[in-house]
Structures are given as structure tokens and as C-alpha cells.
Image (cartoon, rainbow, N blue to C red; front, side, top):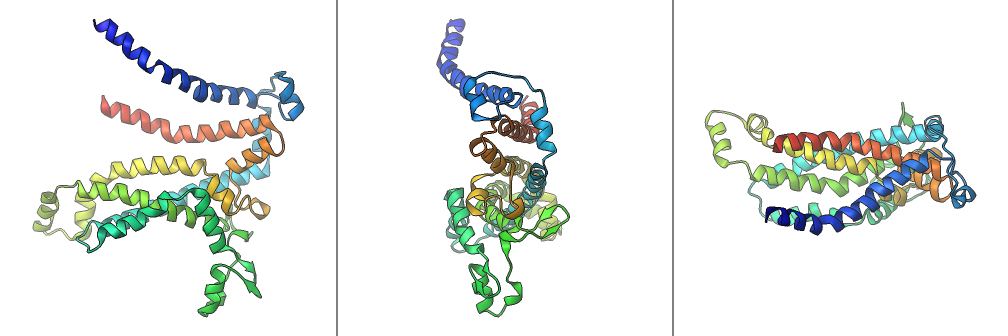
Amino acid sequence: MYRKKKWLGFLIISPTLAVIGIFVYGFIGATVRASLSDWNSFKKLLSGEFVYTGLRNYERLFADWRFQTDMWNTLFFTVFFLFGCLLIGLILASLLDRPLKGGRVFQSIFLFPMALSLVVTGTVWRWFFAPGILPNDPAGINVLLGQIGLKSLQWNWFTVTDTIGPFNLALIPVIIAAVWQLSGYTMAMYLAGLRAIPESMTEAARVDGANAWQTFWKVKWPFLRPITLSAMIILGHISLQIFDLVYSMTGSGPKNVTDMPSIYMFEKTFRSNRYAEGSAIAVIMLLMVAVVIIPYLISTLKKSD
């Protein structure tokens, strides 16, 4: 009887396993195979002839200044995006955790950006940060700055090519747009964590003479630490493969100042027909995401055991 139930369960999930095996792991395998080939023209792709080239496509990428810029952009975008989302989400959650009139309304307002498509967000913020032609014909936020007497703060925003070391300043508007969209997500996670903390624990801390900061750090933060880790994993996964927001807002930008590996992969594959190099970029992006997610999954499984 037990064996029959076991086989029945396997038969039920077998279609799902087959679909995942073909359309997830099968495509990953095909991408890895293509990255090791010489399919860098449409003619070679159509021929179907596989010529093994080893890691040549990867060597070309890491020697490519544009790909190096993309990796730096991804690093800085991820760091500032994570920091902004976590900080703003925690502040908003702490404010909404208090007895606040209209708290649910504010909560809905802060969560609303998550309902928007990243393409819509990119388009709106592109209009907002459009610099125009300075100083004579400003646009977007530069118009507002000029009207309130802050012309000195007018800037070229996502078209600027200035840098601080390897950090392209044109990424700042992109980071602001991404944080605006997803800080509501971290707010919701932190708010759920704060409301799960027993009131008796915070009351006991106050009775013992702890101030607001000590209560937060000693009582509340230990409950929020696992939530922070989960949020970092999910947001890190999003930032490492970001495409639609950046593509609709700035594209690769002048001198590739806002370029990302995903944009370069798209252009390599579908505009230049260099399928092998595009596949190599895809594999590198997959490895970056795997480095973030796999340790988290392993630690989660160990805790469940």
C-alpha cells in the first residue's frame, strides 16, 4: 500500500519534474554548451555545427572594457540598492508599527510602487530625471530646481559621464528609482517581523530602564536579523539580473555609464548575433546569482533538519 502511494505521488509530480528538467536545466545546459562554441554569427548558428572553443568567449569578455564596466556597475548598484531598500524599509516599518492614524493608508501608499511594472517605473523616472539641455533648456526635475531658485543643483543626472573611481555617478538616478520601487517590499517584511514580537518583551525592556534605541537593538533586532538576510538574498537576486528598469530608463547610457551585464547580453545576442559570447554573459550572471542563493538555501535546509 505504501509503495503504491509512493509511486502515485511520483506520477503526480512527474509532469512538473519533466517541465523543469527541460525548460530550466535543459536550457541552462544548452546555454553553457553555446558559451563554449564558436557560434558568433547567424550563419554558424544555423549550421548547427558545434566547434568547441573552450573558455575563449569568457577570456574575451573579461578582457572587454565594457564588460568590466558592467561588472563594476553591477557591484555598486547592488550595494547601494540593498542599503537603500533595507534602510528605508526599516524606517518606514518602525514608523508604521506605532499607533498611527491612517497607518493602513500609508502602508498601501508605500506598497503601491511594487504593483508597477519595472518598465513603467523606468519610463516615469526617465521623464523625471531627464536633464534637458543645460543651462538654457532644462527638463524634468531641473525645471523645478530652477523655479525654486536652486539652479546650482541642476545636473545632467543619468547622462553625466563623471566618475568617482570606478563608480559612475549616472547610476545614482537608477538606484533611486529601484529603491523607490522595492523599499515597500522590505517595509512589509520588517513590519510583519515587528508585529510578531511579543509586546511583553518590549514592555519588560522598558521596565528595566532601556531607552528606545536599546529596546530596538537588544530586543527587536534579533527578531529582524533573519528577515534582513532573506530580504538581502531576494533583492540581491533582483539587482544582479536587473534589465527592464535600466533598459527603459537609461539604456547603456553615454560611454556605457549605466550599462549592465544583462543589457550587454541582450545586445550581444540579439543585435550583434554573437550568440556564444551572449551565452557566456548569461552563464556568468547565473553563477553570480548562484553564489548569492545557494549558500542561503544550504543554511536554510540545515536549520530545517
